[in-house]
Image 1 (cartoon, each protein chain N blue to C red):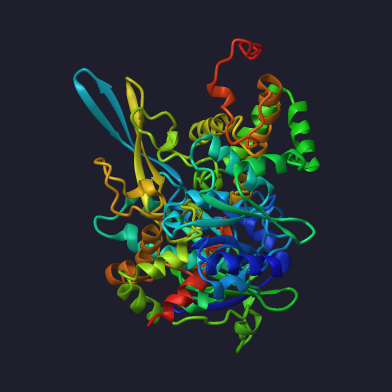
Image 2: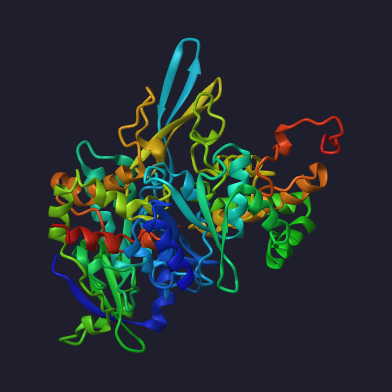
Length: 267
Length: 341
């Protein structure tokens, strides 16, 4: 903790960064993202087990970019988000200063994407055992049972788009949902509109989701949206050998044709 | 009318639901669904989560649903034929076990939808809803009703209000003519209230944290204070969670859904937090960044509504803060605005 404050103070004092995105105290027992812009604000930085939000999404926010050079405190999901965003040409190498807090309290500063890649090869990047279990339960259902499960969950949806807004990979300037000529996805939050929206979003996240879980934790209606995209991680790996957010120069599995691609998904 | 005070036994509460059903009134009440609490139709008292602080969404959807059909039309070579949808199809319904801030939230909606010529889709449903609110024995740190003119025992907007006063007794306040008619359904279960019952000692202690008039004054004067709005909204991610759980947010969008022969026009919730909300066809967006959208949210509730409708568009329920994925806390932000200058 003190090391983080010391480091960020130094980064701001020597103008290495103009803003540092970290965690601070929020309402009640919550933690929130804070944007530290001067050395005298660094005392507000907090680091504890409740600091779980993936802060990588903020590096693309217009008003944050506008503050100048960005530094960010990344967790494992945020590191992967950075690499995935890099592979999609949303962030350049060296553009953002990335710090990682090790469990022993020390800090790692990543000088480039390559050092993040190396770090991730020896880091657990998978989903939790709880999540694995829930996915196994879903996969054990029949197709119609699973269909019913999701339709029941989507009934709760109010289309506030918190899932999309919280997702670091949902950065499209104009989301498919917002396109109205033609209107691909019904705008209404009715049965069809909710289903189409969530399936579209899951498909657009297939092979890109870095399993940070922000979509589910953002949902005010408590829909376990993360399971929808997590379920697609394994088939993408099996069929295309690809895992999102591990290489900054990865080519996206679902938009790249290779002659030896499997065709077993064609019904 | 002058309010009447009666006493009801807790053990008779379940009979109320039974009698409402026997009279043919559907009952809407808070129901626990995993981590969320929804307001929906209930069968019996057992379905109702009376102990929860607040439902996740407000009660506004009972009169202003997230999706509402307002017009049907058919398409032919000869042209479009409109088939109006009757707005007056709702049944007399009882909204039971909601909180005072839910009941008073309708005050803002009444002002918005009641403006001439009057939004019949909202007004007819509202007219047919009787509200039995339960005062708040508890509050949490997101609550700030007392700072915006409400309170844990505020009766504004309620037809009846129930307050637990001791182990087996509920103080029943009969507040309106509609409330009187509803109370008549269980008149035999009511006894006269002893004189001098003070319900305030059974209510939550919600501290006043800011002066609402000061917020209104400072909000109106702070339109150009870009630094203020930016500082408050840097972490805002631009979703609509706050607006959709809010009891007073009333913005909507229209969408036509049609095939080659027929179509329907739907009214849908919308939110000023979305960038698409103000995007012009030309591509120009007058509110191009999130801080301007956050400013709009606050300006609308604390400047435009007081000026135009003589009502503050916030009940201090704190739902927006609880629902916010990134912990935008409106109580904290309004307190900061009250202190500007």
